Image (tube, rainbow, N blue to C red):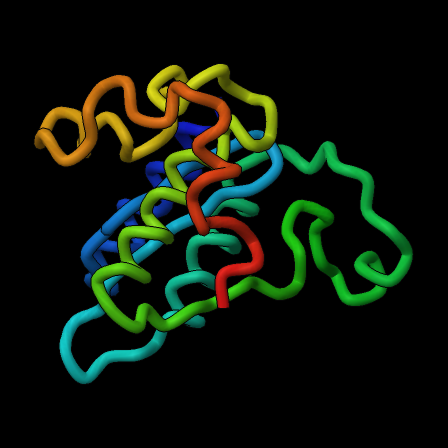
Length: 151
């Protein structure tokens, strides 16, 4: 399954280029990952590139590839860019962790965050950071300030 391939690639990159995996969610069309790098290391781009390229090399070429990407010998899996955000404080950290864990509900892949298997929410529940019912109220997204518009 492609979810497992991406999870394996993330772990391989993490082993060669260490980072602490703070939160992640893998969905059919995209993923979110929040990582803390070792002190004096800010090479997020290398890790993201290695994750994307490592995954792309391990799955069959079945996606549609537009002419522009074909000319550049690119796959049609990933957006060329990614969104990077430097966490400002504890509140910002928690909003982003919440956003990641709620994302499968937001995109209609799950009724509640804990229903989605490919998420670190289960680790957070096991550690007692989240209650197992966290986010089960679909109105949470309306009442929390987490979403794509987080500065």
